[in-house]
Length: 151
Image (cartoon, rainbow, N blue to C red; front, side, top):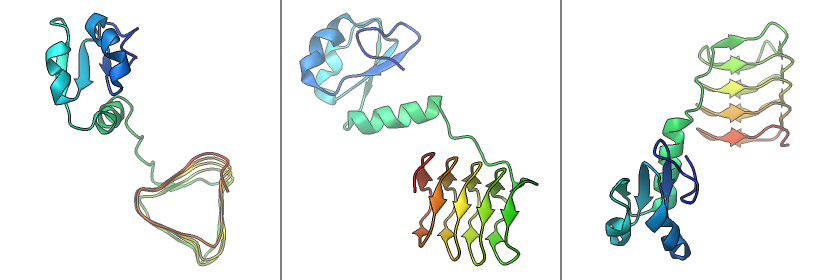
């Protein structure tokens, strides 16, 4: 993954802003995501990947190169989990987490270290909760990602 200007033969790039068409003409990228009307401008040494929405296509390609790691099921021995909390067996709860009474963590979730989940919080499936996150008074849907340190 690299910008048009610096990409080499082993990298993928994209063009969304027409101000950079000149960079497309000289790119050395192995593949370039472009809208349909610019496919003919992609250099012969590059593969044109024609997409209607370049930002969306770029996000999908980036996800293939940098997949989200799967949860490692289980509750770390240094986590403090209330006996009335419901943790799906496929969820991962990291060290030094606190999960209070009545909270629930859905299948495939990955709860990072030092996370605080207050009473009654419900977390859907396949969520990623980063380190040092505090969650209270919340119902999270599926596939929500909370980055480290957010409250």
